[in-house]
Length: 432
Ligand code: DLL
Image 1 (cartoon, rainbow, N blue to C red):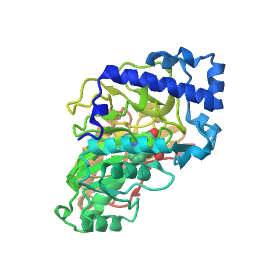
Image 2 (tube, rainbow, N blue to C red):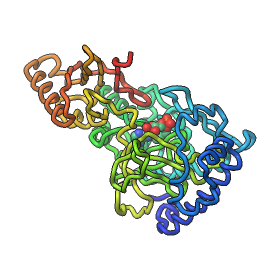
Image 3 (cartoon, rainbow, N blue to C red):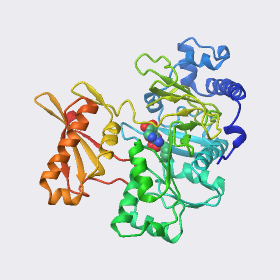
Image 4 (cartoon, protein in one colour):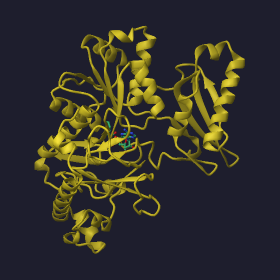
């Protein structure tokens, strides 16, 4: 299903022409209205009048999270506050938060883009949409709320948390779509089973999950447990929030809303563009934002462009599921490991529960990684031999696929922390 078919299926030439026009006007606006960009362009000797093709974008300097922080709170706004109708801020898990603003038009475009993402995931005006993302400075709740309303769906703005209530509302209000982080979806699913509720008494059909990395194995687990089709959607507050890209029913890559955003994939070390299909850092330039445009913003998120056309008919290019940020990457004994790789392996092994935690320590100057994994009850209490076999199997799989030895510690069900928002799975004691 499409929300704006004529745009989402636009011919590439027409799209590129539109992107260029919008890029030129964005550059003119930031140069006029944002001293930070004016100074940066001047320093690098760039005359934005000379940007006459999309490729010319590469001449412009990058913008980083550091730049956003340095200009806290309103330094990068391109309109006076009088024009700003909404302010959000990033969660600020590392360092101080960054503040972003929206004009009336920005809110309208944002709603359209999240409506597209929702429609691509199967949601229509016939759906009852339960939004279990946090409402507040975080962009997840409001961003998807406005999109769902724009679609004409019946929106339940329940926000995150209070899982028992989520399930009661889901039953009583006959919610057909659940919107939250994948880890919260899993917690809701497990709670439904723990309470002995028959999943067939629920009306759920679709789940749109995002805000954090999740593996395809986790997707299958959630889909089976909740009996839904689960799609991934991606975004970040610095660019708008959710609505940057989303999967369609093909579940093979996230269509990027390219009429509003220009994306590049670069090698984070050399900063050069990488060819399509190669993994690198996603860099985004906004094309229509009025209050808070960003030019070549380095997201730190790692992905690649999926080449070729999608069977759904959309012409917007697809990015692969984001499996992590370059600052999530763990370097253990010199080997690069992403938590998401560990997740994929664990989810694939029978007898384990999909809950895990990664603990890093340093012993005598040597890195040590321990994976805590919840195991089935019977294995934990009765079948020590089987438990040992399972631990050996996990160790072997991790060692062969990651290339490092890992300690594995089975723990009883429900001992590891659960998450109502974004999961925090890594405890790094090496930095303390
Ligand atoms: O998480 C916006 C959002 C809300 C997106 C709801 C989708 C749904 P921030 O709090 O600024 O904004 O965090 C952005 O989260 O740079 C990624 O590292 C990560 N992230 C977001 N969506 C995904 C996803 C929101 N689908 C940061 N897959 C981004 C992997 C994701 N990582």
